[in-house]
Image 1 (cartoon, rainbow, N blue to C red):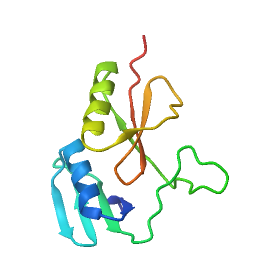
Image 2: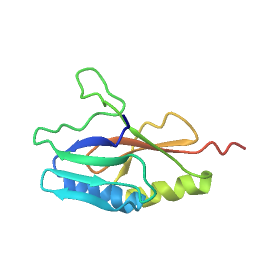
Image 3: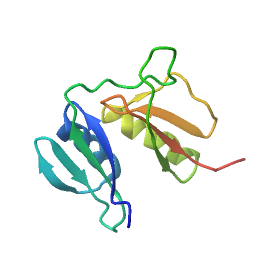
Image 4: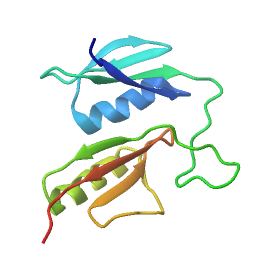
Length: 125
């Protein structure tokens, strides 16, 4: 058994796949109206995006009665400069920086569909 993908629900799977394709540089595999996949060229588990017509973005951090996130993606970057560059690239592609930031060397962002994801580095002074 092996993990082949993490699947994110989205109201527009193709648009969300395009955001992550630009961010990660991974090629699109399957490209159907209700299902799109990305796979890293070097192999390994990828990301998939499926249509969810009733999708409700999670709140970060969630409060009482709000949609709680079910998972988030973590992307390690190499150093503080790379951390800020990754944030800038994601924001230019349609993400937004979350208001709440829990740690100094982690940046929480929300993708265009509202899924939280993080860039992090262990580049300590």
